[in-house]
Amino acid sequence: MKVLLVFSHPVEASYGAALHIKAREALVRAGHDVDDCDLYAEGFDPVMSREDRLIYHTIPDNRAKVSGYCDRLNAAEALVIVTPVWNFGFPAMLKGYFDRVWLPGVSFDLADGKLRSRLQHIKKLGAVLTYGSTQLGAFLAGNPPKKIVKRVLRAQINPMGSVKFLAHYDMNNSTPDTRARFLKEVGDAMERF
Image 1 (cartoon, helix red, strand yellow):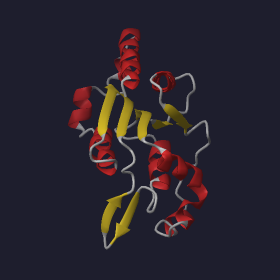
Image 2 (cartoon, one colour):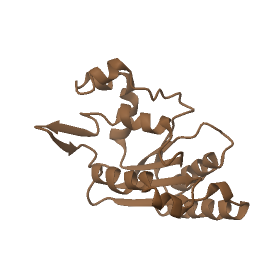
Image 3 (cartoon, helix red, strand yellow):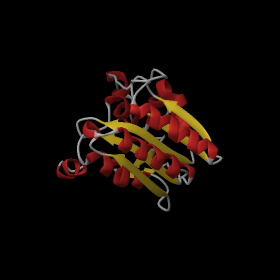
Image 4 (cartoon, helix red, strand yellow):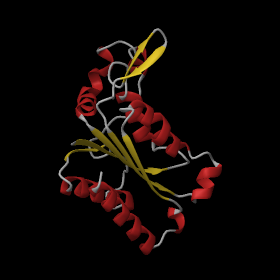
């Protein structure tokens, strides 16, 4: 299966980077064809400019600056996101990826005010997230990242597709043991993905 692995963390020596490596290695070991999209390493520009917004609905002009990323999304049969959660949301880099790449004519069509997904070719979705907050704290805040993965993104892929959500909460109080356990959980889950 062709898996688009989208990674968003600016520090190469971070725990998030270790999760990214573990996910990639496990997916490859399982026989998947992995397109490794490291947004920071690739220098992705997450900022939607005035011009980008003005042509947002103008197909195909809207994809001109991000056509390679659009092609990669369209080639994917599965999507795995590895990212930290900052301030109960995705980092600006990842949010910008969704704003600039998941465009009309790429991830959805808009006709008569109604959306129709163009991502039916994506049959599996995975998310590997780290939170500074506890699970209870995230729950009390409404856990927006989990809802984005399990509701918003899930609604855009193949309706029969599966979703795997993995989270290490309370990173502010994590230990080498909790991090090692989660790293193993991610590796195991990606080998079965």
